[in-house]
Amino acid sequence: MQATRHYMLLSVQVLTVLGLALAGCAPAVAPAPTAKPAAPAAAKAPTAAPAKPAPPTPQPAAPTSSPKPAAEQPRRGGTLFLNEAGDPPNFDAHSAPGVALLHPVMPVYNGLVQYDPLDPSKVIGDLAKTWEYSTDGKLLTFHLLEGVKWHDGKAFAAPDAKFSLERMMDPAVRSPRAEYLKPIDKVEATDAVTLKITLKQAFNIVPLLAQGWMLMLPPHVIQAKGDMKKDIMGTGPFRFKDYAPGVMWRVEKNKDYFIKDRPYLDGITIYIIKDGTARAAAFRTGNVHVTMTGSGSVTPGQVDSIVKAKPATQVFKTVSLNSAELSMNQTAKPWDDVRVRKAADLAVDREAGIKVLEGQAYIASHFPDWGVPNEELLKMPGWRPPKEDDRAQARKLLADAGYPNGFKGKMLVKSSTDMMRNAQFLQDQLRTVGIDLTLDVQDATIITLWEQEGKFETFGRGNSRYLLDPYDVGKRYVTGAHRAGASGAPPGYSSPKYDELYYKQGSILDETERKKVVKQMDQIALDEVPALLFLWNSITLLASEKLNNYKPGFGSYNNFRWQNVWLSN
Image (cartoon, rainbow, N blue to C red; front, side, top):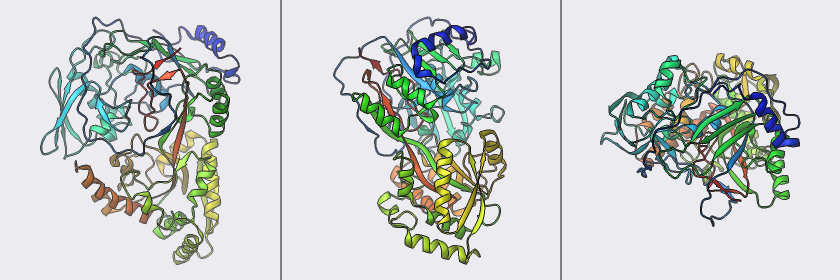
């Protein structure tokens, strides 16, 4: 169905439903990609059997929450209303980035494995029912569910999964997911329900395959169309219905889903609301059931106001997997000198930073839950209170490096409220030891280009990860990571010892032994300051008292399939 076909009709519908909650949120008028829903599937597929989890990816402490107690049996029917802050760039989940794409399309697709929607610390099966590693850890075999169908009725089989993995690995596709598949040597479909992944070395890749972007897309559609930029068709619990750019995105229940009693909902509508005040109003007035992560999230002030007005609101606080930091270009002076980077790190009062971020942050090292634990971290210079001794040490380091009176420089920063707030905080902190950075405010297009080309002295930024696995978190400090295009990689940083440990930890399947190596990597990062990490962000999500069976995943890229949630009256 063409997405533009219903644009005017849906515009009227959404404005009627939301009323004043959408004040100031005019719909975009750019042409929409054409998205075609699938024809009805031929028959129901069997219920998915529970899968034996691979070793789970360690996560931070469970999110704090005030969910409603489970008292009723699941109720079928109803539409879940969500909000998003922008439109997707296109519909191809292998090549395009951003939550504005993932959140709408994730209910339409499945992966091989997933983070458990009801226990986000565990990996469970999705299209795979079981899997096992060979004794040497180099061969991973998935046993897939039988009877799964694409939304057009064509059977899903192991060659389809092989196609998706290889497509994300293809340099021509330029997939942001390719980095996570680098440990793979080859993929084989030995029969319709058996997928074998040969790894370059022993490596626990299952947690990487579980993150929300690792979706299986239909090869028969891609082979016919060339890509999925204008088409949406998966195996998931919901089927694409329609889309009006700048207004709404809708999916409807897949009545032939392979888990025969899911989903409980009839459908999902995502309102595209660009204004933050209007997004909060939409939730407050009951027109949205869940506030979302990323740029569509609510502020602490809005949370307080809403909960005061609606005490039954469910409140969830979880990690965003996004860090606030200063990237330093180490290809030139003064930031090529570890003494200068260490002086900057010593200057920052991280406890004060939490107050600046209105409590939406927490302190952790470069490898949360894997590296140096907080009970040790908070005793270290730069991380410990109070700051007087640290800043005296910082001034001495600057003097030893040839800057007894400090120095002036520039900090590149994106022209957004949250990035400006972080940058101004860092600017004030660094001035306490004589580092005076003028803010160079640029829009997102310039920021992206200059970051890729390393055209900055320092860059006050946020840096997102898909998950907290050390392979993901640690890859940007590997020698040459910036040249290779790794997000958030500091230009010019190199540590042979860090590189050695990074590749070593990836081959260790025993979690306890792996943590020992990761802690050594973390200590190198704390000592050499490849990037000035000052805080990790957290997220507060609000859910209606009508929403049941919901737990937020970690970060902005997991647990948005919604097949288990239901709405009470």
